[in-house]
Amino acid sequence: MTVQELPGSAAAAYRPTPPPAWQPRTDPAPLLPDPEPYRVLGTEAAASADPELLLRLYAELVRGRRYNAQATALTKQGRLAVYPSSTGQEACEVGAALALEDRDWLFPSYRDTLAAVARGLDPVQALTLLRGDWHTGYDPHEHRVAPLCTPLATQLPHAVGLAHAARLKGDDVVALAMIGDGGTSEGDFHEALNFAAVWNAPVVFLVQNNGFAISVPLAKQTAAPSLAHKAVGYGMPGRLVDGNDAVAVHEVLGQAVARARRGGGPTLIEAVTYRMDAHTNADDATRYRADSEVETWRAHDPIQLLERELTERGLLDDGTRQAAAEAAETMAADLRERMNADPVLNPMDLFEHVYARQTTQLREQAALLRAELDAEEEAR
Image 1 (cartoon, one colour):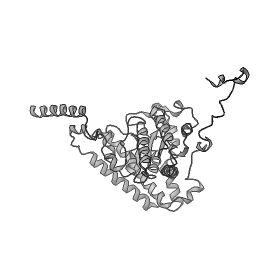
Image 2 (tube, one colour):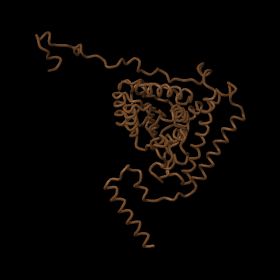
Image 3 (cartoon, helix red, strand yellow):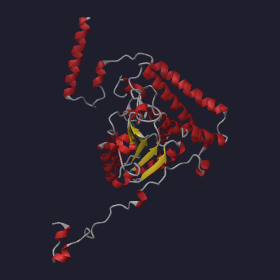
Image 4 (spheres, one colour):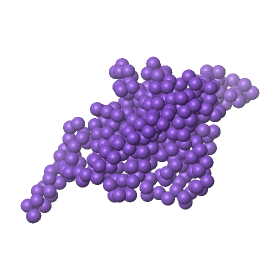
């Protein structure tokens, strides 16, 4: 029976609206993002920002910029198979990572090496997957950093699953899942947000809207007012933040993490930023965007924005600036030296750390490879 076939006379049967029992499950107004991205730098709010936090963010941004440059150079030298640079997006990476506690989990995409390094991961280990040497290069459980995810958006349901399990166990843990604007067009994104909201999971979704999904601009992916508006459809709050303002990113992420930890559920955050470099070293960005567009965004560089604030407050002098640059150069030199050493690889490692207990099929495959390796050794 439909709502137009209710018992009674023909005149009384017609109802233009659903029965009174229907009500919105959630008031949408508090979930809507602000009309403009939230900013701190360049506003009155910057005056109350913690000086220690500002200086830490600055040092990490400088180190991140140098890390991107060195990793890109390693691809040209054949030491890395591929590298997706996050130059211009360092504020998103660093601000998000520093908003987490040690007990929390980070679920990064393939572009989020800086977030993993800012969280304490060895810079070389963060590149091992992109080098093609190992599955991950680090122990996810030890560092609370999930493997850098190359399939788009598949890490988001994993983050929801871990967060939901932590809530059921009573663990005081929050999961942060990072994704690009292109990943929001994947089904995993929608499934993850839906389950997170239904389960009230302690998870935060950070979308780095850098303008392009490889060569596809955002306007060809969605007609929504913003990606943050998508949160309302799932029953969670959406936040819009200037992704080049490291202080604003840290503040917004910190608030969302704290909300999730106290049982408030998930939040979707869109950080508006820009990918200064090409998608990867295999991409020619000049084919789909103008140099003038890139130069416009250089005027909103995250390092320059923070430097201006630090200088105006007397927190950044030549000595502090030089110390940050030297620390970044030391990291780059160590990264360069260690990446230039040829690794000793064992093909049998392919079967390690796939399952806690190897399956029958995996054991059979390992035995076949072992037999081939032994045969090659005997033939020498």
